Length: 307
Ligand SMILES: [Zn+2]
Image 1 (tube, rainbow, N blue to C red):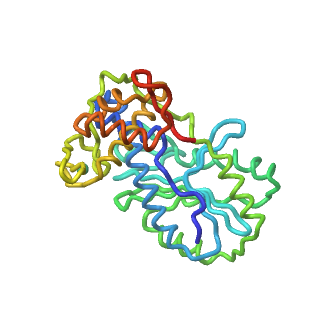
Image 2 (cartoon, rainbow, N blue to C red; image 1 turned 90 degrees about the vertical axis):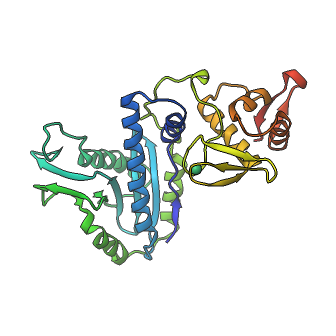
Image 3 (spheres, rainbow, N blue to C red; image 1 turned 120 degrees about the horizontal axis):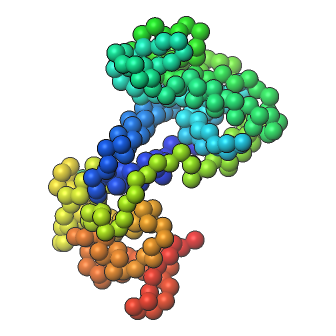
């Protein structure tokens, strides 16, 4: 079954992953980063399950849409007669449900209510679907995916999927009668085209170029402990052993630089400083010349993305 929109890391999560590797994040940002990481892992886990579905359905992962305000939907499944938004949660441990709110089992501090998040999504989605000419009912659930999650006093009448019910949910989705048409495809395409990559729910700490540790990050484990094997022209991670061609590592470093500092001009000197151990200035100039548009001459030269 086609996943029409694959999941990608949000800009916020990407930036925080880079910053976390290159600076000491303030405690609240570190916690926020760890929550994003945990949430993303939970979403990938859910994706593995939906990937196995055989039924005629469309799956759109990770939509950020704007109507009267912005709203996010972790997974949207389009069936012939019904649309299913899912709010995916990767909470771990014991929680309790009390008077409509969620708490860690032994705490008085409620966590943000996933049922409200699901309902908010539906509330925005309904008029949006109508405006696109679709009057299909919206179902959907909050899906708790962590096998070590327990919800005490869970309500029976709320749309909650417990970890032990995930298999049954997939079975149900596989068995609903569904035959999609061109209209459904057009709806899916329209929703994808409306997706906002710059979602405004972004919370980043202040950071500056000088404050960040330089050098290439391992693409696998985000370690800065990398060295270059000059003879083979590869970057090797001292922590996990991952290997990568130096040219590709340089390009990755430039992309990271562009994401962290979109206003900075990309020059050979800047990239050389940023890449640390990777490559001589000559190598870096060659990689930039081959992959970017060169503007200006000699000392005034800088590089832009080829559009
Ligand atoms: Zn590594």
